[in-house]
Image 1 (spheres, helix red, strand yellow):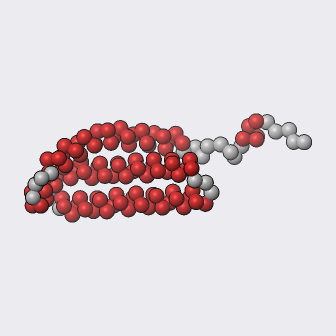
Image 2: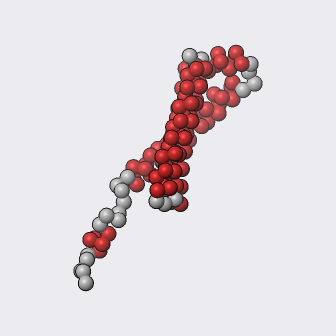
Image 3: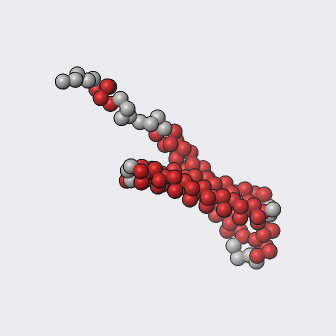
Length: 123
């Protein structure tokens, strides 16, 4: 019979030392979105109802384009972190790793497409 302490039994079964960083990343992106979403709504709302040329001219200005790009980037980062938490909670094994990789590729790919579209309009 092996006499193991509680610490020895738990060794290797603890956290990956990234939980706090992930938690704070989610909180910081949530606060950033709390500021960015109303800014985006007001800047996007000003462009609604305009003709194609008016919308292009409006997003050629730096402020609306930067607000849209920041909202898109922070939003997809927040989405990726939240989806990763859900996957870690409900999917296990190899499927978990594959799902996290696919979700990360999907969210960063969508963010890249959105940023490319904003850059095409703004420049």
